[in-house]
Amino acid sequence: MWGETRRSAEIRQVMSELDAHEIAMITELIGTGQRAGEFTCPDASAPQRA
Image 1 (tube, helix red, strand yellow):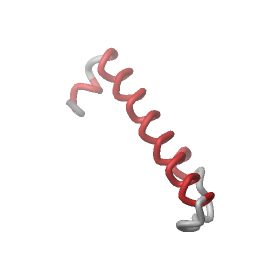
Image 2 (cartoon, rainbow, N blue to C red):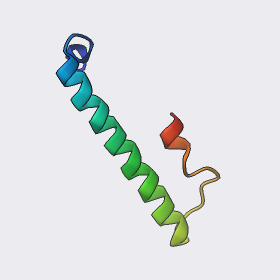
Image 3 (cartoon, rainbow, N blue to C red):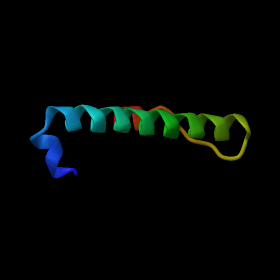
Image 4 (cartoon, rainbow, N blue to C red):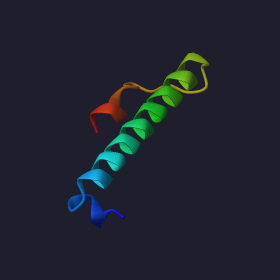
């Protein structure tokens, strides 16, 4: 599948949307954990820039 992303615009778009969703979920989980005091993270938005 990953190799197809270079050749297929449709698959590339779907994979891009999936990546954005995963990054948003990770960022949300980090923020939730910080607010709950479960852990600290110096930069909770770092996954968005990776």
